[in-house]
Length: 201
Image (cartoon, rainbow, N blue to C red; front, side, top):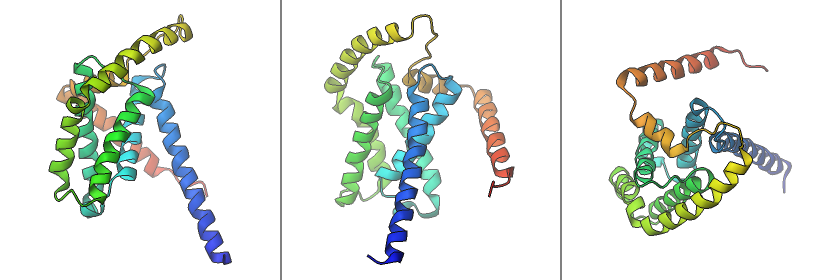
C-alpha cells in the first residue's frame, strides 16, 4: 500500500469515526427520557436525517437533497404517530430499530432498481409500514412496555420522567401555527449564532 493510499484510508476512517460519534451523541440525547423534550426532539430529528442520508440513495435529488431529506423526515413522523395512535409507545432502541428496518428495505428496493419514482414509493412504504407489521409491533410493544415499565420505575424512583418520543412527535403535530413560527425562529437564531462564531483553528 502506498503512503498516499494509507493516508487517504486513515482520513476516511477518521471521518467515519467522527460521523459515528455525532450519531451516537444524537442517539443518546433522544434515548434519554430524563432529558428535556426540547433537547430530545431536535436530537431525534438530526439522528433521523443522518439515517435517511446514510441508508438511502439521494443521487436523484441533486441540489434538492436537504429539502427532500426533511420531507422524508416529516413523513416518518406520520409513521411514529400511527404507532402512538395505536398505543404502542416504542421508544429508544426499539423505535430506532423499526425505523432502520424500514429504511433498509426502501434502500434495498432502490439499489435493486424497483423504485422508479422515489417520493410515491417512499410515502407508500412509510404509510403502510405500521399496518403491514402490526402484529409483530404490537407483541414487541406489549412485551417492551411491561418489562421496561418495571425497570424504569426502579431506576427512576423519585425522578421525573419525560414523555416517550412518540408522545413528543404527537405534541409537535398538534402545535398551532404560532407555536411552529416561534420554534422555527428559535432554531434560526441558534443557526445564525453558530454560523457567526469564528472557527477555533
